Image (cartoon, rainbow, N blue to C red; front, side, top):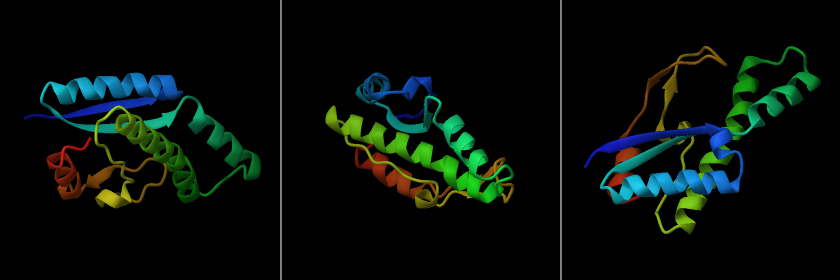
Length: 130
């Protein structure tokens, strides 16, 4: 059984109907026998809107706080995606980077992933979750 990573973001998850459509593609891959990991970005123009709000409050915002703010868009999307999958009968769970012990360098707003503790992800895949 292969592990398949599917990436969705922006317009492909811009609203509930599009999230459902993406969830259908995930379920298709599961039915084909794959274990699926979904990586999702913020919906639609959400990141742009968050950046605009930040710049309105502070024209030179701290990069650490920008990372914190922008990550909220991704957190919303992965939670909504998991909810859609569950509603369609597919067990699913969402994670933040911290919950899977993702380690990055310290270059805020341009960080590179150094490591991920994949044990938590593997456990959930073995339990039949996306």
